[in-house]
Length: 439
Image 1 (cartoon, rainbow, N blue to C red):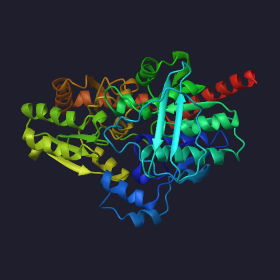
Image 2: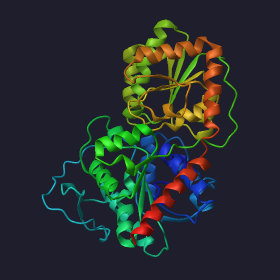
Image 3: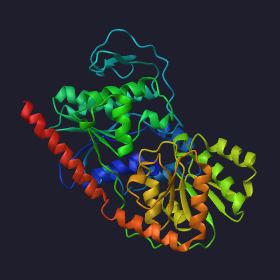
Image 4: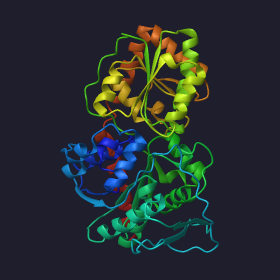
């Protein structure tokens, strides 16, 4: 299994999903994890970016970590600084695409310039990555692929299972080298992160991997439809496997001690933090006593603060910055409504966490979690008035709050990481059976 981090203090939704899924899978298979390990300089730089600058990084590095892959899987760490989702979007690479196509090759000395060209089966050239100084994201992706392939060459393995685009090149290389099937798990797409029409090498890498993979797992029906429509992949090659919910007893419906609406997540365009503030403005027109909390950090942090001043709602909005998991849980339990007005969210684990904390959730049709939360209040991401209306209803109607929370919590009882792992195992077995028939 190819993951993308083993540093829980920095985990986003993808990191959490990979960890919990791997933990559940390790009970059924002999699992080997290959994950990147950032150097200290990169870690400290990243800490500044995501708002961890007030934490003692040395203390964090030295403290024992309960949530580590080493607890349940053979784990190998690759020297690669992969922080792929700290930006609001992944900028399109301006590297020109060549007319000729070649096979993927990543076995090169670490300090040399790397040039990789690949194409999808229809013959169109799809990716031409030229890498310069160490530290650029495309270099780190190839660095990870190069080392991961070397590690895999010494392992007995039946299938390679890769999570999201930063591990796809490694997965393709291992598949070619070891002649084993490749299963890729899509948690997020360029179309989500760029909220538009993506171009450049990351989109092309995703395209290449989807055509090379033997099976694609998607975190929602919405993501599956996007894969078939945007990447030209046959629908029969894509299966939906929903993320699980943490195995904790759900909290009762939170009482309204004070009217507080919370946004929790990275402050990036796809999750809609600026939309949240526009919704807040609409709510405050009707009820000036409501408070709003923006929890998280990211590239839209300063822009969000500027928007608060521009909208004239400074007194009603609080920015917490990055919160450790325990503090995030406390915040949710002290809130009245959770709102994630995402523009394009493949799943949205935070909506499940809020539900388990006893909160009603207001989300968008563009959020995958709407598929598993039957009583979530849902509106279009651009319908700020509709989202505000949902919030006001939930703040005013205790019976509605209770009905929604209990129905959503009931739906999550069957949606555990164990059940998610079972679905993944069924998918892996089906791929292995087809592979054996072809031999």
